[in-house]
Length: 167
Image (cartoon, rainbow, N blue to C red):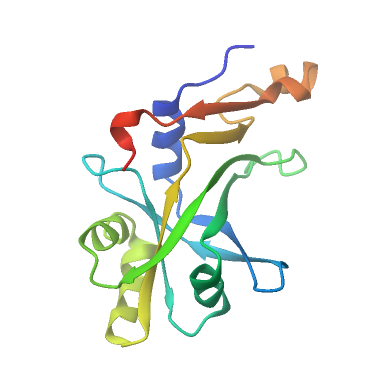
């Protein structure tokens, strides 16, 4: 089963705006939440930006422990009974100002994200910037359902972010 390359995976992720972001609280318990995200400009190092408010649990958790994950689901619209494909980014998160130019660029690329920029009027708004590890784990993305049905374990693969796209 031939697996997609990094460029394909990044192109697909850039089309999405929703993921599940996981942090760890000071007691070591995971905290997951659905969140809107945008991806940094192609000429910048790869980073994922999430707009949120300073007083939210996820921000406190990132300040305490920057190791996080973002899972981006790719649900099947017609065959809703088929498990969703997904891409998982692990990496280090940091809190950056809501005026971050790459974060603003990322949130300017999709209507739903632009609508959320209204939060910038709130002085409590910040971006969580996730800098992913070079290895990105994927399941099923770019692999036909027929191939997955024949060998579902073969649908799991990883791609490496090129060094030129890393900070």
